[in-house]
Length: 333
Image (spheres, one colour):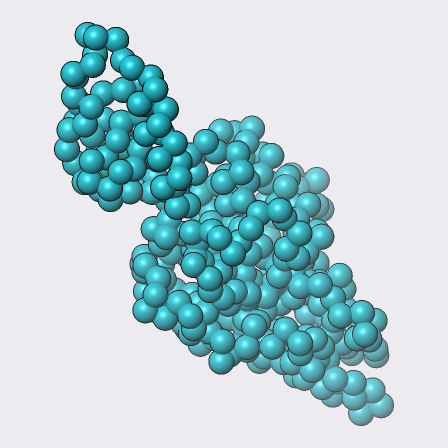
């Protein structure tokens, strides 16, 4: 639940490269994943359900699992399903992009192709609006036709997907992801309708365990990740809700916690994890490090980033302690 400081240009580029590699490995659904819960919240787009191979232990974190994201979250493909579609989704039809008239298996395939081609030509890449799609192209007979779940060609008649959402124009053969359409989000999500609820304040689906059990921030998921600057709501990567209510990508959060001496929210500077053990160690270090006599009785005014209390505390070069909550996540005022 803490805010993070902005990263520099080089760091930002490194994050973008990491995100590209991650999306390539994990992109696979066109439904967004709704948040599931632990102590913290995690959001995911159905097209980007990530495999958890990190050494980072989610079970003891101070952020919540929001769950799976939109219909476009990348989940591991079920190899038992028929081989059709693309690397992102198993489906029997291509989407005819209203922007360029070309047919692609999914919006990710369209966006990737246009980004590569148009950037090479010096043009600004455009993205496919899934809600604006009015035609599909059958993957078997190649007939272009109005959006529907079954091919209108009587000599073909294949089903384009076991799951079909007419609002999102989303098709998927994999029902194990339990896709469903959220009216509040305006998109399809995965994880099971009975396992999630829509938070109108935060503007996203959260796990039912988080109902009345998370800090709401207006439109918290309709922002950019404070680390990599990718939009969170449409992201194909899993997201987390911090104790402070702010959100960021799971992988960005893990990297932040693993590398930072004091992991704080990049937006509000609240501590991300429970740091009581660190504060106890700081107390011991300060007790062993006696300040020179001219500074020994000096006091300074501080503001605590964790409890937001103000007051005075003893000056020490190792840290300034908040006398209200015991945190050393403070700043001078």
